[in-house]
Length: 113
Length: 114
Image 1 (tube, each protein chain N blue to C red):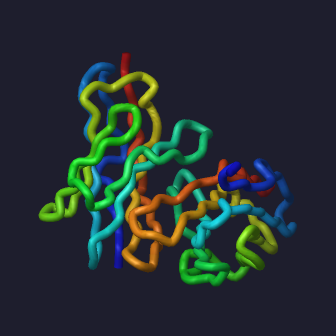
Image 2: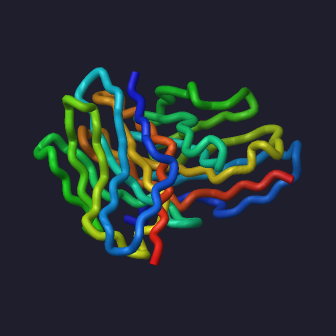
C-alpha cells in the first residue's frame, strides 16, 4: 500500500535563507509524486510533480524537489525563502494504475522577517 | 475550463440535518476524489470514482456519509444526519486517467454543524 510521511509538522526559516521540507514515501511500484501548497483559507495549488523524466524537478515560485529512489524521498527545497512562501505544504503520492491519491500530514512553513 | 466547481462554498446547518455537497469536475477527467480537511486529521481521502464508479470508499467515516456520481459531470457527498464533528472543509478534485498527471482541486466547501 502507498503512504507518504512528512517528517516535520512545522518548519521555521528566516527570509532569504534556504527552505527544506522533507517527504518520504512508501510504494510498491514507481509512484507519481507531487507537492501542493495551501495558503491560509485557500485551495490547493500544485507546486511541482515528478514525472520520471528527471529526478530533479523544478516547480513554480523557485521551488525544486529531488526524487531519490534509494532513499524513497522527495524533499522540497528553495534556495531563498520569501515571506509569501509562508503556507502549508503537502507531499502527495498517487498509486500507479489505480491513481489513489494520498496526502501527507502537511508541513507548515513559517518565514520570519 | 472553469476548473473544479464546488457548491456551496459555505454551509451552516444544525445537528441532525441532511447536508449535500456538490461537485462539478473538469470535463474529460476520469477520476473524481472527495477529501475532508480538519486541523486534527489533515486531508483525508474519503472516496474516489473512476468513470463514475466508486473505486475505494474505505475513507468514508461511517454510514452517515454517502457519495454518488450519477454522470461524468456531477458528484454529491451527502451527510445524513449531520453531527458537529463533521465540521470541516470538504474538497473535491478531479484528474485525467493518465500517469503522472495531477489532481485539480475545487475551492472547497466549509461545513459548520452547530
